[in-house]
Length: 289
Image (cartoon, rainbow, N blue to C red):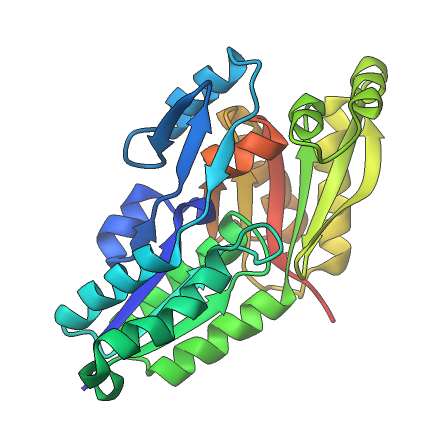
């Protein structure tokens, strides 16, 4: 009989409620800010991080989850009696965590050869960020609770990740400039004239899809793009940052435009906010081919 465990990392921005109620293991990243190290979700919650980021001139840095840490985790899962572990991890283009998780599988099996016939470790690369793969982890956990097989869960997750797209608007460019995502001069000029970039995240890549003038045009632009590109009647999610009103406004606008509410909402945590800034709003959806 299969005993399935779903695992993701803290950059998926899973809610603590989903983590707790669905039994999902969320692996925390370590973050360095102003010379001090914190463990996301353990020592640093979203609200605290937003306040710290606003008062800091430094650039937050994050560390990957190492192969050695993964080996210890695999040993723990095996000893707990899991037959299948499905890991859904951050975009490999933005972190070495995924590669480390893959490398660790063989190392673990070399150290624990009897585990080869007792546990299967399936590692999937999220190809994106935040709730794009967080939603996949939540649905996978629900499918496991419903008695779906590992193969059925893997098929769903791979299909979602292959077609999932994000449009997100940034309210300021200074954090992207600090992290090196865009030149500092371009960020300064953009903020001065009120231009707000609309980012598209799809199949590993983050690109500036367009720019709008003024904050009030961010949500309407994203709604138009998603309405044109979403698979009709398919689930979508809202993503937002420190300003809860942005999430509420996007939820209302998307519900009105699409005719049904979002399947879930995700609030960005320290990993994503370090590069995008604390104030972000967007939609995660299944795109037409």
